[in-house]
Image (tube, rainbow, N blue to C red; front, side, top):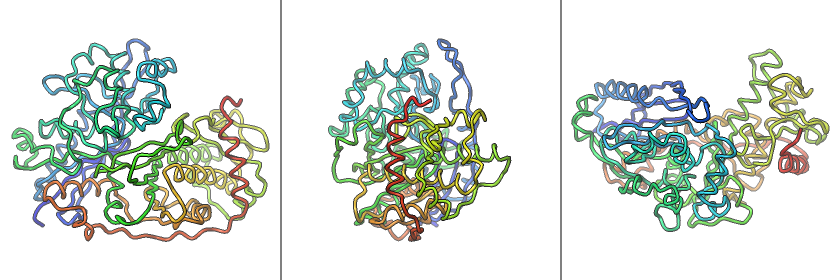
Length: 511
């Protein structure tokens, strides 16, 4: 081993430091969960979740120092969850709170933002960014700080996207790269490859870094002070950083270079990603949670998302609570087919309103014409009978997830013959991986063996940046096993789906 790579991998839940060798073989990994730091909005009196930047920094630096004693580290790469930024002052210190993007301001705030930034559909056409709820669009988070933390925000000299903030701590260098600027921020003009008009409407152009570089390049070397603290040499380099979903996609872009595929990356967020040669929206895309990413190679990636993992966790936790069990419900094909035949019971999204492919839907269960809102079920006010039936309950939940997945895949550009690769948490979901290939009968469906695709993709950027190797030269280091999923024996899905769609698209405001 000539050198080792350290990857800082920051998810919304788990924070991780991983080590790879120069052949991209994983060597070591440590994890930690950080509780949010609560602060108060002095105007609205709301408690806000913010990221524990200091706690994370201390832990990351300590773990890197531990690994520096064991491995010949020469390069550090950072990958993070999306929609997050850090405001720094003229001394490079954090000057405003780093708020969770899941925090949801009032409807009045949302209206004010769009009055300033522009009409939703027009913005989607020009910035390829959909109108997500909460503050999942970073432009909203910036506007929120300007409105509710004006004194702190006024100290801002530079707004750094999340991967580049951590790179700045290590190198003292500021920059931006394609995968984060172009990921539902409202701040990037994909066609012109520059900051969008929203940046000027927010009056922040002077606060955005000027150094725009390719993802697979070097941001800078460790500062002497940081190098000493970490026990590394000052010629240790740090890459530009990469958005996590784009990091997960990277191994597939290289391994499947000549193949048409959609990556179905499953977890808290289920993300369908389809690399394209150009930017093209259909009329049907507008108003939906469909957008374009930029890949690590700067190419358009049509993307659609929904909170599939959160839906699964929320509903199964509800099932366990009501049935006083710690066991997940098990399925039978017979129960699924009974549900498909009856076509009278449906589980509807979205647990977080406006977060997925059915933004007009209200979360709950429609059972034989009676709607049971999720909030009533959670509080045990009104409970549908299906939630007491193990096999029927898991069937109605998985059918909902598969309908949402099929919709997301098609909105990402799935067509006949396109391969579907499922990675992440749903790889272990037997019913999901039996239903999905039955539904996608014109598309080969596979589960993949990559369990840490995000960290691996980030490590790939480090090798390319450090050595100048082409992506094609890394093909031999990428080991992906594909398990061809076999369809189960299900009848009546299309008819069931049509009734489900009618309800999901017209459920808003249901009692």
